[in-house]
Length: 251
Image (cartoon, rainbow, N blue to C red):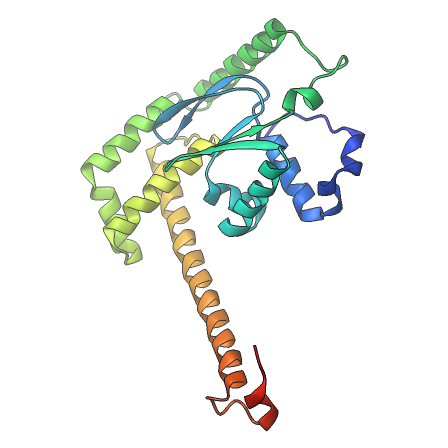
């Protein structure tokens, strides 16, 4: 993530300033927003974004915020109620629009003409393309080239089957994780150096995801067990309730 954003002193008078987590999440959204109109590849879909817009998923945003999906959605709902953002969601993606992006991100000292911004962006793109070509002429240098390779993987299924066997998982689960992985690398802008790099990244990413899901499942089950034991003791239908007062305690 490159570049910078403006931050007005008025933020100290806003409700979001007084909650450190919410303030950090709000700054994250500002940093993720596009600073100029741009077409991005999300998964296999081309999306045209305007200034102040973000193309993401709730799951990806939750990981960036280090929060669960429910907490992330609750936070976004609060921003919508405060008219700080507008949100449009589909089964594949969520597009967030920062309501007053131009109001706070443009001023007399930082404003550039449309021609200057386009020229700067074009020069940066040329520089990045040249660097990629110098590093490895045979590598996957563009998102379009990588998407072709992704299509080959999905068509053949051999690689996904080998991953399923390696991790002792169902092939359906691996296919779902593969689709999520493709969406995530689109969001992060990750371009792999070659097919070996892509496969290695997916294997490691999938192994971590499965492990995290298992850990979260165990944690949830432990919480439910603890909660059930507590309620059972209060009802007096378990030997955990040792005092007569506990049998009469209400909810």
